Each structure stands twice: as C-alpha cells, then as structure tokens.
View 1 (cartoon, rainbow, N blue to C red):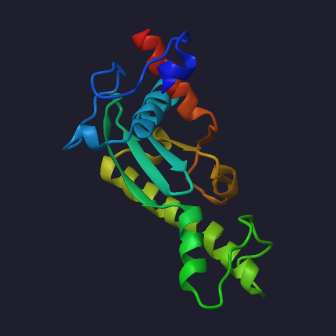
View 2: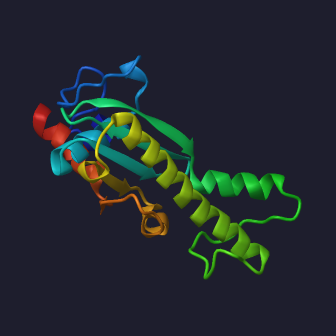
Length: 184
C-alpha cells in the first residue's frame, strides 16, 4: 500500500532483519512490537541506559526496558486507559463513558469524577508500582534509570506519577527516524 500511494518517497519498513541497533534479548524477538523497539531505540539514543519507556496508548500501556548496554531486555503490557474505561462502561450497569481528564480530587463526589479519579490516579499508581519493581529487578540505582513517558494519553497521567524523568511525546517518531537513517 505504501508503494501504491507514496512510491517515490523513500521508506523503510520496520520488521525482522531491519537494522535498529537495539539487540532484542527476549525469548522470541519476533513477538516484540515494532513500536516498542523504536521506542527503546529512541530512549537509548536520547537518554542512555538503563531506561524504561512507558507508552500510554488507548489499547495498551506498555513498559519497555533497555539495559545500560542499550539492549532491549523485556517489558510489561497492561490494559490501556481507554480500553479500561470502555470495559467499565460496557459491563457496569450504571456506568457510562466519561471524558478522560484529571478530576479535581481523588475522593470523588459523583460518578463521572469517580471514574476519572479511578482511571487517572489508578493508572498513575500502577505505573509507579511497575516502574519501581522494574528498577528493583534491574538492580539499578533509581537515580540512574531514565523513565520516559510517551503516547497520546501521557499528558493525562505523567504529572500524577513520581517515577518519570522525562515526557517525550515524539519518542516513537524519533525512533522511526533513527531506524530510517540506519537503513537508508
């Protein structure tokens, strides 16, 4: 499809065999999504390792770990904010879809704010907890690990977390550019 619509534009498809410069040290490297690899590449290049990238997508929130040698060593995947809210709306008898935004308080006084509080502060606590466990498992000093938030829902949660050292909304695109430059 890319060739059909943009045949004259140089491109690189990120797939197994494409040079990324990030060794993937997982049981099955082909299972790791390309978005996660390019995020790891961009984080290792921009911030050095060890680094943890937390990508806040609507379907999944992914956690990706790069060691101090710039190798992708694994990560975690949890349900994304939007899919979690969608599940509550579909399965909760008296719950409905609400706007995703930071509520005024953690202790909500109505259903809309209660859903917002649970989503925003619940995800923030989850992220802080998973990142802390990852840093502990790495055996790294907390101050030596770059923790980078990205993804279109990151602005909703990053400021509510204690773990982030950077918010980089363009991290994935920067990683794609780095892969292109290595393969062009």
